[in-house]
Image 1 (cartoon, helix red, strand yellow):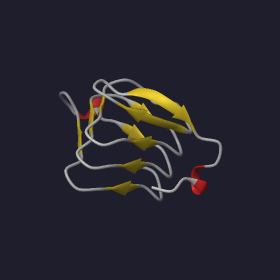
Image 2 (image 1 turned 45 degrees about the vertical axis):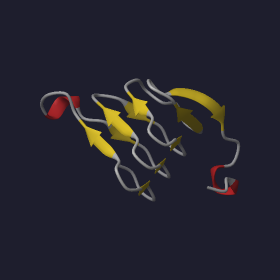
Image 3 (image 1 turned 180 degrees about the vertical axis):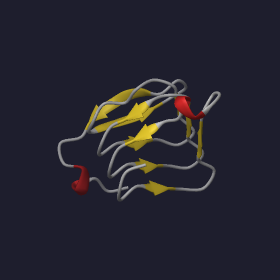
Image 4 (image 1 turned 135 degrees about the vertical axis):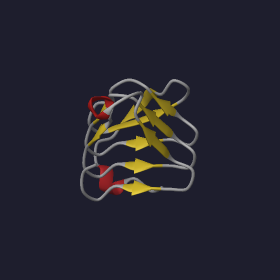
Length: 84
């Protein structure tokens, strides 16, 4: 997990089996209530994972993802101007 990341209540970040299958998380990521990150996925810098979403595929930089499975719903121009 990178620097300046926030993890709220009920978030699960797990792997499928073994150390080689863990998630790689970039800087400035925000994980909202109850979201899950499962398996060997790469979450880029400046990303937001919405409530109760399940991430099973890679997330590109500057993205907001939502859903089961999580999909990009918006690209972020300036992460620090987002009001959460």
